[in-house]
Structures are given as structure tokens and as C-alpha cells.
Length: 249
Image (cartoon, rainbow, N blue to C red; front, top):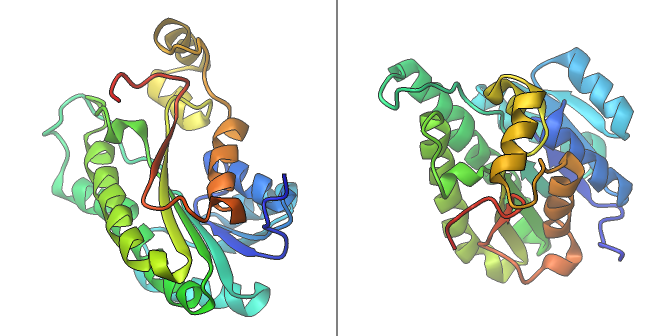
């Protein structure tokens, strides 16, 4: 299937590894011109070389730099037609009320303010051209909160609601906004949360109907389709990629 992405310029944030890097690789394979960002120059350059993208340095905490980054990308590559907002998870902890005010502020900036700042910076151009795709990478803990991920549970839920709200307002302009929620995908972040790869695999076999962890490529395929021309009538939606793990409908 031709996804109609050839020649489109895409920006994937937090893409030096894991889910973001996998999404960038699939968008590039579909013919998109892909910019990827991360705070570490060495890692983002290595990832860009590996997947055939263009690397840009950006710290998700630097909200004022977002319009500058978007301007640099559009000057070098062309107007951004596809935006994938992906941010690493904040600290975990067993006590839901045990996080500091500073940790709450940082999580809010990373998971809410940063994605919305990218939307504000790219959306006017998409609306003027009557074509745009925006996808936020969330988490299934939005639907079924994890006891250890209070910061992620709360702030990612806010961004999900924001994307739904914006989607209804820009739908007439040919721009879609959707969220994709990964379940237990085989990434370094997941192995860290479970203590080891072996522990994560054991958890998957015992609690996920698919009896395994999901792959980065499987998750990236869902995101890539939502970025496609064929997905033009899907907006304000939440897609779950979890091997059947969620109990809720």
C-alpha cells in the first residue's frame, strides 16, 4: 500500500532511540523526509545516520527553542506536514504522593507543554496548506493507570484530552490529530522499569494475551499509518497497541 508520504517532511521528537527512532525509520522507508530531535548530539547524529533522517539537537525542557527548531527544520527541509510528539517517561515511584513539586513541574513541561508547543508551532502551516498529520505517543497507563507511574499517568492523560479537543477544531482544514498508546513494547525503558529484559519477558508471557512483548516496528506501523494520506478520516482517535493487554473496552 502506498501511504502517500513520499516527499512529505516529518518531525519526530525524542527519536534517538526506542519508539521515536522506530517511527522515524518507517516514515523514511515510506519516502518521507524526516527530521529527528533529541538533546544529545552524538546519539541523534548516530540515529539519523542509521535510519536515513536529519538530526537536530533539542532539549524537551526548552520550550522557547521549539519555534526556533521548527524554523530551522523548515528552512533546511521544507514545510513540516507530519509531526510525531514523543517524550521519554518521567521517574517512577511506588508512592503516588511521593514526588516533589519540581518533578511534577518537569513532567508537566515534558509531557504536556512541550507537545502542545510543537503543535502550536507547526499547526498554522498545516492548516494553510490543508494537509497535516499530528500524532502523540502516549501510554496505555492513561486508560489503566500504573501504580508506579503517577507522573506519566496524570500528564499523558492531559495531553490526550488536549489532542482530542484540538482535533475537532482543525478537522475542516484537513489536519488530523491522534494519539497512539503503547502497551508493553520491547524498549530499554521497559526493561528498566521491570529490572531486566528477562523480567519483562516473563511478565509478558504471564499477563499479555499475545504472550509476548510488542516490537518497536509493530508500534511504529500504527503511527505511520495514522500519518498517511489514507488515514484522512481518522482524527481525535486513540489507538492502542498492546497485544490485548488492556482489560477495559
